[in-house]
Image (cartoon, rainbow, N blue to C red):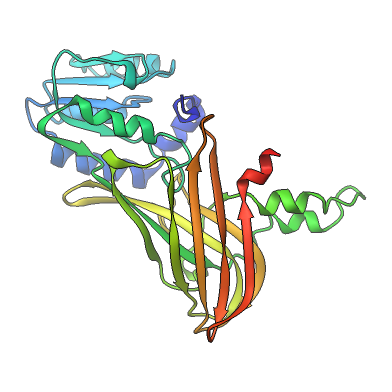
Length: 307
């Protein structure tokens, strides 16, 4: 089972305080849920999405969550007079409901969509839907862009002595790691490029493929930022890109710093996978190209963290 199921109340507090997330889901639920609907909320957490669905007129809401946090959700619903929510503490893949749903919604999405390893859960949840039912989100788009992050020091920190000791042995480990950051738009060295797009119901365990990232500014390339956009409803997209302060942030895939200039490009191959123990394993390799010639190359993988 994904460790994404098991997060503490403090992380739920952070999600509840994420105004971009809250506003987008509130607007989408108001648009999608109709009076009399049966709604399923997979991974309900503190229950806020289920409660909004109930307030939107749902006849019945099934709120499914394997963690004890569901007790908080049950109490909050009772305190707000919402009696038409059925709370089920279980892995949603092991649940059978007494009726089909008009709407199935979820927020089982990690950083760059993949880090909560919830793809098997979101693929399974479509079985709750009646024919013609609605899914939220409907689809996911993954974006990438080259970035300049001069004040980010998660890797370079280990190049200097720490406590009078040489910690450079940690550089290999640190540089083969993907990091959650908040990147401002002015730190992008080129345009955002759509890398992958898929229906939520078809979210794969392995996402891989090449992409070319143009360079439009002279600076130092420190890596690549990745983020997702979730299509919540016909008129509402949840964007987690640079400049938005969501709890998801952006994923940074670092490379050894290299000077780039306008007209350069990066030929990047990115591989996002989930292993049998629900660990995300990322690999990124490629080349920086200038007038068709390789000026730098990189080959990184988080698998090297595991020995």
